[in-house]
Length: 111
Image (cartoon, rainbow, N blue to C red; front, side, top):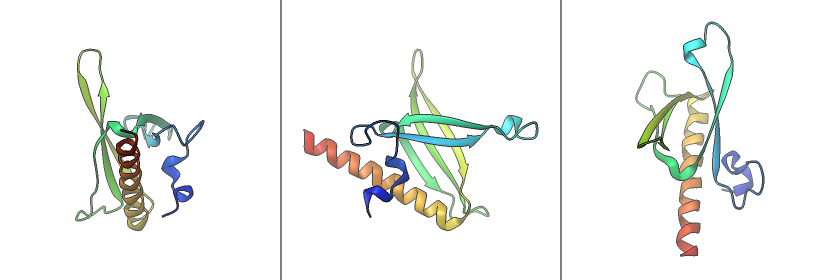
């Protein structure tokens, strides 16, 4: 896979030194009042889990769990997201895994 084809590497600034994901998700609490998009940003090392709901009735849905630093402790934040199709969902999950693998390999190489 060509790193230039990976949308998760595209970030503001120098993509060689920044490893942040930018997710767009709906605010479901206000979904019927407005269709406002929210953006969340986090470093890829904060990802603790990601998975596609393959066996479910909605195989185009996936989940990302991140660890955030709270005021006194770490907090887990879960994002339940939806891709346009099952194939796109699989592609997103593969790309997230690829980015994490590349980052870990880069960090191991630097040590």
